[in-house]
Image 1 (cartoon, helix red, strand yellow):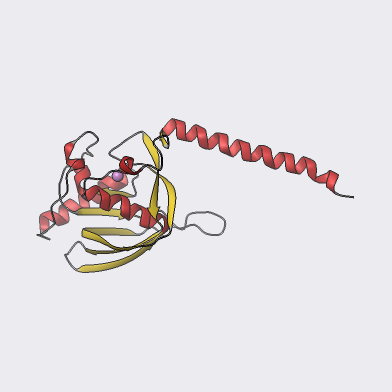
Image 2 (cartoon, rainbow, N blue to C red):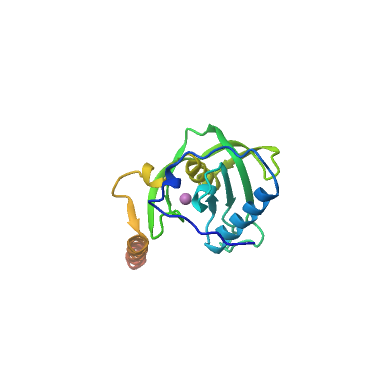
Length: 197
Ligand code: NI
């Protein structure tokens, strides 16, 4: 498997509507395997073909691992999807805000509102029709990747122009939030004994 070069903004291919996949031949199988290897090497959870410079409706997605009650990742709980010619056929009215990054916009993250759940029709790597029901982060990843196939990026959909940060800014913001929460807990702990008679 070959790792492919990931194209970044302002490459025009990222802004182009991708063509449908029509041939599920050996070349496509090789491309899919290379895309999976590229996504994993980049620690990504999804990669759309335009991101490696191919303007076709193809994406690979690997979900975040599920965690047990103690919060530890369950080995082997990641799920890999290959989707060709995907369409979102239903989306929930319920929406959720979440922070996304993109391998084609390195060094930044931003907050985006997405449908909480979606239903997708697509073809698998052999061209067989598939129907998927997705929710939560997996649904978010699917929406992000399907946007790529239409030349749409998450930066087009920010909840607010200000909700866009460098990785460092976001990290510092999260740290500050975590520290503020710790301080609140300390205050409660200190105050608690006085409430006891
Ligand atoms: Ni992306």
